[in-house]
Length: 158
Image 1 (tube, rainbow, N blue to C red):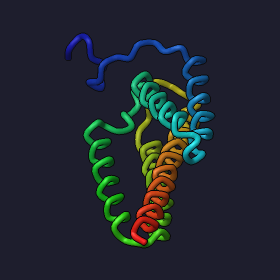
Image 2: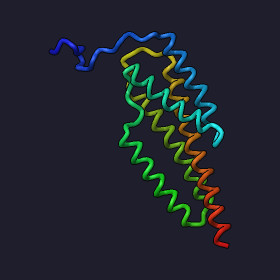
Image 3: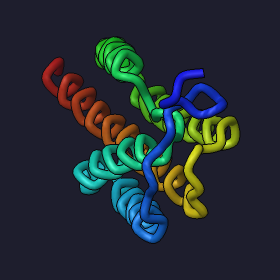
């Protein structure tokens, strides 16, 4: 066994100020509520997801999304946007936006239940709820933008 590793094979974490950790988790939840507002909460949603990533790294929790997964999600979203702009079904765009935000929230709920962090955080559930709200706000904002682009394309066609 190497001297720098704990018995589980994971590197030992530094001591974390628990009060600061709880406050930052509660802040993430509040930012998530503001970020859930479509279009107006875009900045707060991005701030919430950044704070969630920082806290996950600080507590030894699973990282929210790897960079490769984020790029894959962006490519899929771009392809879906092009497909939706080509067809003339705004209801389909709205339904897909709501379903994608619900699916994303369910995925984060499963991640919350699947792993326990190495650092104790009694406000961990607030952290995940805030991130889910921010993610839903981002998906709904992009859905609204896509609907606006679709209606503009329909208006330009005639």
